[in-house]
Image 1 (tube, rainbow, N blue to C red):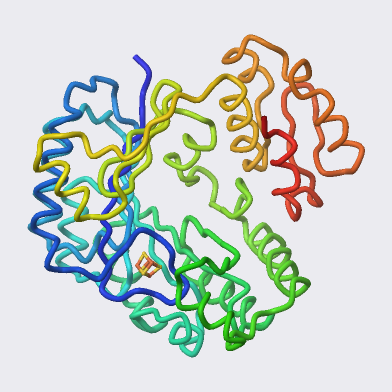
Image 2 (cartoon, rainbow, N blue to C red):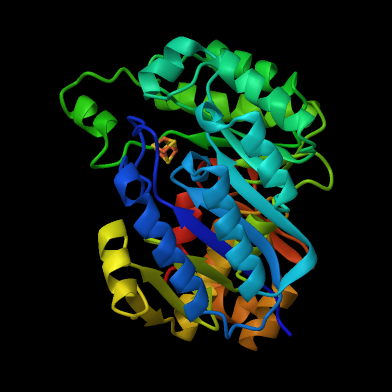
Amino acid sequence: MKEISLYIHIPFCAKKCYYCDFNSYVAPELVPSYLEALKKEILLYRHIKQPIKTIYIGGGTPTVLTEKDLEALIDCVARHFHIKSGAEFTVEANPGTLTRRKLLALKTLGVNRLSLGLQAHQDRLLKALGRIHSAIEFEECLKKSREAGFDNINVDVIFGLPGQTVSDFIETLEYITAFLPEHISCYSLTIEKGTKFYEMREKGLLQLPSDEEEREMYHKAVEYLTHRGFIHYEISNFAVPGRMCRHNISCWKYEDYLGLGAGAHSFMQGRRFYNHPSPLDYIRSISQNMLPVENMEYLDIMEQRAEFCFLGLRLIEGLDKQDFKRRFGKDIHEVYGAAIQKLSSTGLVEEDGERIKLTPKGLDLANEVFVEFLP
Ligand code: SF4
């Protein structure tokens, strides 16, 4: 039976960071009814018999929940889904919300991977981002996580921040790698509508690094982290051998996943659907015994092929040409011959007998590559 991945969204945070456009709210009063709704949603999908090979509880900040709430939620998942033995089980955590007790509870509940949001080493940058923790609190949290037995930890960083120099960013990389995390995600800041940063930029109050500096930071991350033994395995992700994020890899390989919670997206058997993003709408819908799905679409074959390609190209090893043929019954060149030819001649992709992948130039211009695959 085909295995699937499971994503669970906890849309609550202690405070909204100024750059954040994730589906997250400061609304502690909604937590009890949201968790009840989430448990009911789990019941609505309990007919799913496929083994779950990875679980990812993300947010928001899942660790704003109490140990008791986390235990009830994870227990409900374990009772109603078939979790494969050895499944990867990640929980996202904000250093300002983790206590020793909570870490031990997570470990006991079977969580085997933590994803900690640091973002930057310098406290002045953390403050400018609206983060609730300092670098020292991150250090303490990492230390406590190790003591609780976590041996698979990701640290998130962001580059291209207002007021950040290339040397600030290198210092952040040096700082993080000194703690020997197994995984580092390095994302470039994007300013999204609806965020405080967006408003500030509109008013001319945001001093962002230039495009050249932003690219230099990315190149430094690739150079520095690979030199330190990390494998650069996806555009923005680095891991020590054997510690790549299996959950995200399965999404990039276009495998099925079920998403539960407000705004969570799912991709199952060619259907893409997502839940109401508003926690209130989500709770209301479940309380009326309805699936909280806001939109569902069957992707036609051209859309599926396109998604397969641009997700697969995010992986540094590239997309698997045989896998394309197995899924879609056609050689990839029959479908995208002209696009691949154009991208190869401009030096954005390269291919061998098995794979097509982005070149270093293609990594910088990935969006230009992806549009060539759109139907
Ligand atoms: S902690 Fe994460 S999800 Fe919450 S507001 Fe900050 S960036 Fe957004």
